[in-house]
Length: 96
Image (cartoon, rainbow, N blue to C red; front, side, top):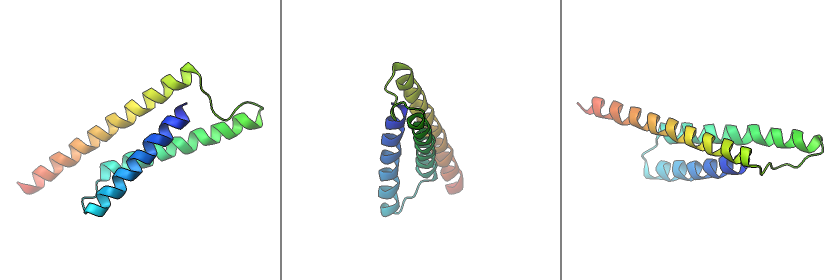
């Protein structure tokens, strides 16, 4: 379940990045968060392939895996908020 959750988060942040790039207001925090979620998705995809090679299923839909996915999403959003705040303060300091 954490794989599914991180892929959805990666796609959402990819769309946000593309939209912000088209508007000319590229955000490093969106880009960094997007890369973090894609990296987590890649990691869990490799783990899923290893599970298939061991005779198990590709997706783990257990409660523990769902909790792990929620923890990863919250951690990613906290990092995004911190990076966004840092960008905002740096932008304000630059204007002053």
